[in-house]
Every structure is written in C-alpha cells, then in structure tokens.
Length: 182
Length: 274
Image (cartoon, rainbow over all chains, first blue to last red):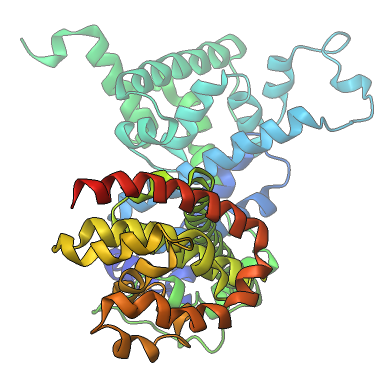
C-alpha cells in the first residue's frame, strides 16, 4: 500500500521520480504475479512496459489509490491480450518434449498436483478457464474488489461473481479428488 | 428475509472469506492454501526494471509532459529529460507543425482555385460578369491578378487590362447613382475602344485595380472635372499601356469581342436613356 496515497499520486502526476519509485515498489510485484499467473513468458519485460505506460500516462489519471490500482491492472490486462494477439500471429516454435505431450503422458491435473509450492499453484490456476483465472488472480493477487475486477475485464460485477464462484468450485473439485495439500 | 436464508449468499460469503484469506472452514483448507500461495507470489520482490523504465524511476518525467499541481512536492528535481521522452516530444511537435502546414496550404489552394475558376468563368463568358456586383468582381480580378503574377504567367498590370476592365465598366455603370455620369462613357463606348472610356471612373473607385494603374493614376484627377475629355486624355495613357495590352493579344481580342457585345448591350441602354 502507498503511504500517503493521494500525495504520491499527485506527485506522480507531476512527474516525480520518487513517486514513480513508490508506485513501482508497491505494484510491480502484484503486476508481475498477475502476468506470471496469466502465463506470460517475459514477465520482467512486460512489467516494465506496463509501468512505462502507467508513468507516461499518469498525468491524465484522476482518482484515489484503489482507482490507480485498478487502472494499472487494466493496462497489464491489455498488455497480456496484446501479447497473445502478437504471439497468435507469430507463434513461438518450441522443440518437441515427450514429457509435456498430454497424449502420451499423465493428465495435466495430475502433473499440476505433483508440483510443489508456487509452480503447483500456477499449474492449478492454469487448469481454470481464462475468465475464471482472470477473476481469481485479480481478486487475490491484485487485491481488487468485484467492481474493480469487472472494470478491468470490461464486464459486469454479476458476471465476475459467477466466474469467481465457478472458479473456486473447480479448484475445490480438483483438490478434493486428489486429496493432497501443498 | 435475511441474506443468510439464501444458499447462494452463504456460498458467496464463504468464497469471499477464502479470497480474502480469512478463517475458513476445514474443507476449504487446501483451497485456502493454494490461494495463499498465489497471494504470496505478489509479495515477491519487484522485477528488475528495463533501461527505459529505470530512466523514469531515476529522473522522473519531464514536467512539461506532466500536469502540474499546486500542492505537489516534486521530490528530487528533474535534472534533464530522458532522451526517449525528448524524442517523443519532438515527434509530437513535428506532427503538429506538419498538420498546421497542411491546413494552411489547403486553405490557400482552395482560395486560389475558387478565385481562378470564378475569374476564368468571367473571362470566358465575358458579359455575365457585368451582372456580378462590383465588389465581387474587383475582388476576383485582384485575387487572380495577384495569383497570376505570383506564378509569373502574366505581367502585374495584365489582369487589369483583360478580365476586369469590362466588368468594372459594367459595375461602375450599375453602381453609379447618377445616370447622367454614365452617358458620356457609353457614347464613348460606341466609338470603338468603348471599354476604355468608362473604365476610368470604374477603376478610380476600384481598390483592387489601383496597383496595376499606378502610372496612370496621377493623370486622372486632372481629367475628372471634364468627363467628355476623359477618353481623349486617356488615349496616351492607353497607348503607353498598349504594349502590355498587345502582349495579351489573344485575351485582348476576346475582350474586344466581349466589349463589342457589351457595347451592343449597352447601346440599347443608352437609347433607353436619352
């Protein structure tokens, strides 16, 4: 959380390096976690792109800390979508790995549950649909309210609640089937 | 009815507790653990910024690009703007200048095209311009004269001799509050170079033609008191201007035709005014 959020935001709008650093220190971690959970490969680069866009556009921003947080994650979300569009036009060529071929290896769910810690969490979240993952990650990692998530994703709070409910139900189901903990 | 009566609200509360990491039911322990791990990932150290971002974090943003506020502590001063930002700024101003140039250029081109086509139509048609109000006629002739002069197509005095002399006659005649003033001119028209005689009162009142007639201007005030002698006194002036007029001979012949038409048109008018 930003200390004196209003003052920091006002200073950032005036171009203060200290304010930029405060905002970056506060939000870069959650943004990177969000990007990681979304499967972005170049997390550092995309995080920097997001904050470059934030700092060069913050002079036009108006709002409090919650609004700033929501705005930053909106930019991050759009960067992810742009990255997907780019990669869909120019697909990455990955060498074939028999271990990761689901046609001959274990199920993705089993593989996710066998991982430990952070990787396992990301693997489990990766089993959800894109929309469910977006909602859960933005709510947990970015600490956004239902309304703020709806704003970031461009949908309604009701839809966000429904996605959240179904996402959590899916995770419960997966975990109860395997009966394992982290 | 309370929200607790609704199963959906109960599950919603449960979900909110898991999301927020509050105390959860024992059957949600695994889920809470997964979400707790996800939440912890956000507490990791911020990733290393790129070079461009590092510049912003070190120097801040150029205040010219930011919105200044009265009660803002700028913290560390901004010594110099980052090169990337300066480049962005320069590109913006270049784009602005280019746009302005396009707009101004398009405006000038449109004005020239409009004036040129109006004048060309007037020259081609000859007579109908006499129906155009005098002010517009003078405006068009002045604009076209300047434009042609700028392009170098005709001498500066040429536009006066060809397209405007006849219209100015007509308009000056129409504008003249005293019909008797026009009478000598009209009678002069019937004797040949009809356009020249009444042109002197018309051009005297026309500011657009004044530059082209600078040489002739000093002679006119002396000639004004005697309208009957005006055509005769102007003849030397006209003969001085003859080479210029001859230079535009094709146009001159057109104007002659127009003038003869004009004379023909004017003669009934003169008959109408005994």
